[in-house]
Length: 315
Image (cartoon, rainbow, N blue to C red; front, side):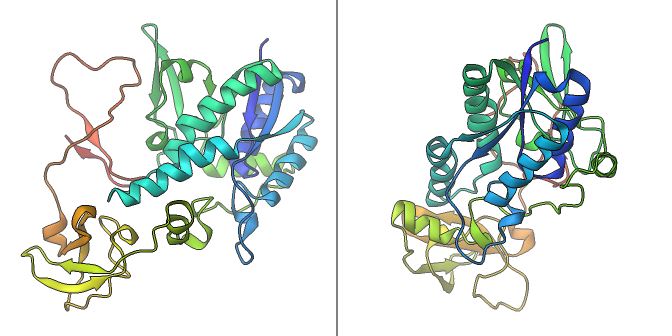
């Protein structure tokens, strides 16, 4: 039986995924790996909640010892910085909203870890604690939603290609979150009751403005906030500090809720609107990937999700 790398973040999901693999395949066939993606967070940041903190590494190591599998740390700071953090910053500077978890999956977990895991540990596949399922049909791999609809994470995995999917396992795909926590408790894993991280791992306290300045020298230049009619209604601190759909922190009081409708880097302008003005019936999708390997040849029905946990919209 071939060896498999279990990506361990120090959270309950990846801990249980590794434990299930070890029970199924034998502890000699599973290698636990924690990835160091960036430097330490500043003082005051709740280290234990981040998947990439020293505390998380310690938790992952303790779980590996308990389930009796080899454990290694893999330094991917350089690759993560270029592929994830810089791309995150550049998206804001381009007036877009980034999806760093998707980039991390595409370039780090299911690329860097796969390639280096093969070379260093003799493994030919990677397993993660994502809630998703795989199906092999008609000679192709298909990415399927998890049994737990509330925890489904296929939104972050759509970028994976056939080669990556063929060398991936999702041990939690048929489980619910309560079941995962119950398994962790039964195995007395130290991460059994660990809360989930709600923040981007490399953005301390949710403030990405520091990253804009540190990595691109962008401190922000004040500019106009205009409404849908082009009337100036306020002043922003820098266009890249705002993102489409944002409601809070606009510094504009119009007597009703308003949202960012558009960010215009070329003119350093932020456009806002009421809810009815922000809503769209059509939009353009780019970078689409069909995990089956090829696009349908005929017109087809689809659903669109613009963010994790958002409702699917027929398209």
